[in-house]
Image 1 (tube, rainbow, N blue to C red):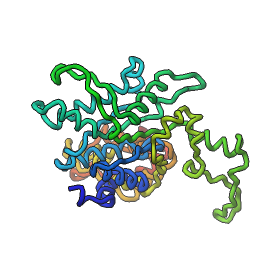
Image 2 (image 1 turned 90 degrees about the vertical axis):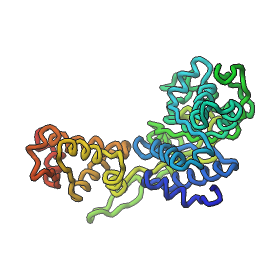
Image 3 (image 1 turned 135 degrees about the horizontal axis):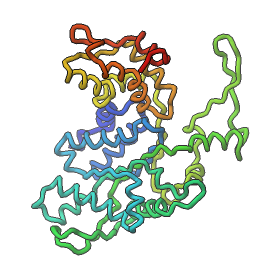
Image 4 (image 1 turned 180 degrees about the horizontal axis):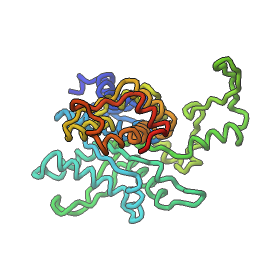
Length: 359
């Protein structure tokens, strides 16, 4: 099966769910192919604002593997929030918790009657997704965050070791097994709130002051000086060290991908095409009342434009903006319905978003 797979095919599948993040999708596709082929694959760190698609990419990989029995049998996938690792590290068992989850997931896939040794070997070939890895930074507000330090150390132990002890449950015979964790693939993602501002300060008013020069921009007949800054162009490893990620931890990630902020076109596509978009959820609600909901292309574009005013929220801004639009219609749907259909057009959206309409 893996001989028939290519990075392009995997990327095409993942790209149906993850929009506007071609670099991240390509990197994940190559890593996944290597993993499924039994080859070594470097770990991946995803850095991006809230709503840019980090968790969506992780879920897309899970669904992609689960959809094909042969692919699902090639690896075990677990996803864990970094805060949970931090809480477990307080009891000195964060690494054990990750292995326990892999072992349980492998058992679920292989069946209760499977030999524990076979389950263990499957768990050793797992993929570990860690959400919000920035929540285990080593310090917060200048104060050491001990649980974060321990959680980083626990992950580091799993990433670089070939013999990690794992207490087995009674059904598996009890005792302690030795897990070779060198075959695990780690994909960690985080918004790293404040990192953008920290790097911008460094290159404008901090130690590298003057490194970022304003450029001359001609707009609508006027000439002005603007600062054009992107985190991708200016982020250095030292910035992540200062943020609270240890050098030893970061050195175990071969790829550090900075996700793009989503533009209008990506937001429009997400709004119209994603199965879990706020539009689809609203349509389900109105269908339960016997009403067909439609939003005109001009209204959709206006919603996306408004969401773009909050670039740090990414796709999540769509939900906030659309909620402002749809709530008045949800409260009295029949009052806005004609022949069983509700059409929301640009004038209604403009009125609501401009604040002229009552809620």
